[in-house]
Length: 260
Ligand SMILES: Nc1ncnc2c1ncn2[C@@H]1O[C@H](COP(=O)(O)OP(=O)(O)OP(=O)(O)O)[C@@H](O)[C@H]1O
Ligand SMILES: [Mg+2]
Image (cartoon, rainbow, N blue to C red; front, side, top):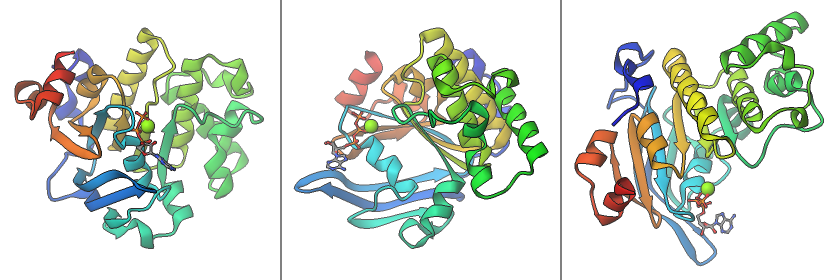
């Protein structure tokens, strides 16, 4: 079921997923907003270096789940752990800087050039010297398939696909081990989308990133995910490899999703 670009995935992974090596854990996590229960006792372990894709109907809790990893939301009960440390107890600012977060709707800083956008976190933490910044920005732009020459441009001078690449470069600049991606390729055409997917897969393997990526596109979920998490009404309908989902859908909802 996986695409051609994915043929070499197991051979070239920087980090092999391993059951005993969870980088993110959800332990009976529940969450409500007012009277509305959004997550019902989620248990989940994401392995170091794993690419986990998350699919499910609008409103089923995907974004809420992601936001719990970088302390944008907290559980009402249960625990979320990142690198073995409970998110609630960790330093929020440090945690967020160490986790790349790419979302479709909140784009780049419009008043900053591409270069400044990419260098945003390293500037905050004074991680780079001036010369280093120029080199690193160029390297990161190249990494996501952009010409370093666009660094002086502003976001409104880019196409949607280019903006999304800059968003990924910005997230990578902080050298995250974890990337949270909430429908990152929503706004781009099918061809650009496919090339972004392929680049992301390559990056993930090369850098050994752990990625949680939310998508509405089941084909995207099956192509990118080492495992796919199907959510339904704040519960896990199924968590399995693309092959498992296709061969053994857990219920009618998953079957319909796959069949569609
Ligand atoms: N801050 C909030 N206050 C109140 N309700 C919220 C809040 N955030 C999310 N919700 C509600 O929680 C539910 C889950 O929202 P969430 O954003 O996690 O869904 P989602 O699966 O990401 O949906 P979509 O696919 O549309 O992005 C929805 O019913 C939503 O209206
Ligand atoms: Mg969402």
